[in-house]
Amino acid sequence: MSKKNILIVDDEPDVVAYLSAVLESHNFSLYSAENAEAGLKLAEEVHPDLICLDIMMPKESGISMYTKLRRTSELGDIPVVIISGVEQAGEFNFRKFVKDKKIPPPDFYFEKPIDVDNFIAEIKRLLSRRKQNKTKGRLS
Amino acid sequence: MNRPKLINGDISDHWFYRELFQQVPFNVAVIDRDYNIIEANDNFTDYFGKWQGKKCYKVYKNLDYPCLGCNARLTFEDGRPRVSDESGVDQHGKEAHYVLHTAPLREDRHGPVKYIIEMSRDVIETKNWQMEYQILFDRVPCYITIIDRNFKIIRANENFRNSFGDVTGRQCYEVYKKRRTRCPNCPAARTFRDGKVHHSDQVGIKKSGEKANYVLTTSPLSRDITEIAHVIEISIDVTDLKKLEKEAIEAERLAAVGQTVAGLAHSIKNILMGLEGGMYIVGKGLKKNNKQILDQGWEMLERNFNKTTSLVKDFLSFAKGRLPELEMVNPNDLVQEIVGLYQDVAGDVGVSLAADLDRKIKKIPLDPKGIHTCLTNLVSNAIDACRMSDKKTNEVCISTADKKGVLSFTVSDSGSGMDSEIKRKVFTTFFTTKGGQGTGLGLLTTRKIVKEHGGKITVYSRKGQGTRFRMAFPKKRLYTLYNKDDADNSGE
Image (cartoon, rainbow over all chains, first blue to last red; front, side, top):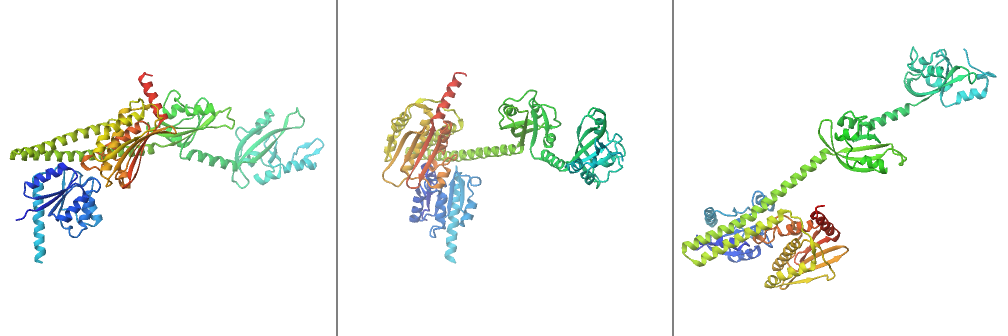
C-alpha cells in the first residue's frame, strides 16, 4: 500500500519539525510549506491526501488559504485539519466564518499543543473516510 | 350722599378735577372713616361693579366686616400713605389681584384726615407671570440655589429641596456637602470676587446620604459687578451619567484584561507546542540512540525556552508601567547606537540600514533606555518587513528632526507595507504578522513609552511600498516632565 501524503503549512519551523516527526513515525510521507502562498502552490503540485494548516501566519493567514483551497475544485475535497493556538470558540468563530463564506467547515480543529494519540487517530480516521468516499464515488 | 367739597365748590363741579379723577389710569375710590365708599371713578366701577351705598370691604373683597390690618384704617390713624398687595373679587366674582395705594385727604394741610383716597391697579397678569416663573424655578430639571455673601442660601428651588432637604437660611457648604467650613476652591467665592461665571465638577451628599455628582455653574445675580450681593448656583445632577461612565470604563478594562489574557494564552500555546515537539524529538532520539535527532530535539527545547524568556520580558516591560527616567541626551547618539547594533543583522538579510540625522539637534531630556527600546522595536520590525518584501534591494532609514518645538524620530522602510486591516490592528495587544516569531507586544510597548514621554506615534504605510513610523515629542512636555522629575527627586 502506498504511503499517504500529508502537507503541513505552518510558519513555525518547530511545529513543522514536531508534526513531521510524529507523522513520519506513523509512516506518512510529508511535505511542508512556511506560508499560505507556498502551501497552496505545493498542494496544487502534489495533491496531498490531507493538509495540516496553521491560522496565524505572516503575509497570508491560514483562513485565507483554507478559503482558496475550498474554492479550488481539484483541491476542494482534501481533508483539512486546522492546528492553531487560536481558541476556536473565543477568538475566532470558524463555524460562523465558513457559514458566512458558504464553504464547508474544516474536517477537524486541533488547539495547540496537540495530544499526539488523538491527533494520529483523527488523521487516520479522516484518511480512511476519504478512501471510503472515493470508493463510493466510483461505484456510483 | 356726603360728597367732599372743594374749597371753591363741589369736586364734580370743576371740569379739570372731574376729568383728572375719571381719566387717571387707576381704579380710584374715596372712603370715609366708616369704610363707606363716597366717590369712585368709572375705572373703579368697571372693575369692581356698583359701589354706591356699599362698604369698601364689601366691594373689594365681598366681606361683611373690615379687612384684617386694613391699610385705610392705619392711614386714618397716622396720616401716612401706604401700598399693599391685595387679593379680592371683581364685579363678576372672579379672583382679582391688585396693588392698592392709600393716601390721606385733609381739608387743610395740618388738619385731621377726613377721607382716604384709594388707587388700585390690576396686577393679575404680573401674578400669573410670577406663578409661571415660580413653577419654572421649582421644576426646572436642575438644582438652583441663591446665596448671599455669607454663603447662606436665601432661595432654593423645589428640585433642590427634594434632594437636599430644607435649606433656607443654612450655609451652602453645609447643605451641599455636609461640611462645617467653606469648600476649598469655592466657585461661588470666585464669582463674588471676580463677577464672572465659573463651572466646576462637584461631589455632594443628598439628604438620603447618597453621593451626588453634579456640574455646578455659579453666576453673579447683579447687574453691577462691582457690588455682587448674591450668587446663583445652578447645578445638573450627573450621578447616573458618572455611574454609566464608570461601568463603561470597567467593562473596557475587563475586555482589555480578557484580550490580554487570551493573547498571552495564544503565545504560550505556541511555545508549549514547540517544547512538546522538542521533547517528542528528544524521546525519539533517545529511543533510536540517534545523536542527530537528539540534537535537533534539544535545539527545539532551547529555542522555545528562550522564547518563553523573551515573552515574559516583553510582557513585563509592557505591563510594568514604569515612569520614564529622563536625562539630557543627544537623540542622534541614540540613533547611532541602534544603527551600530543592527547594521550586521540588516546586512545579513540584504537590507541597508542608514541614519539621516539633523545635526543641529542638541541634548534634550529623554529616557535613553525607553527610546532605545522603541527604536529597537521599530528597526527590527522594519528589517522584518523588508525580509517579507519581494523586492531585491531594501533599505531602512532612521531620521531625526527638530521642527516647531517637536523632536521626532522616523523609522522608514521599503518593505512589504501594510494594508488598512493590518494598520488598524497594529497597536493591538498580541497582534503580530510574524506568526510564531513575534510576541505582538513590540509596537504596543513602543506606543506606551512614547505616551509616557508625552509624545505620539503615527504610522504611514502602503501595501507593497513600505512603512514609516514617526515618534513625535513636544519638547515643552519633555522639559515639564524633566523639571517635575527634578522637583520630585529634591523632595519638594
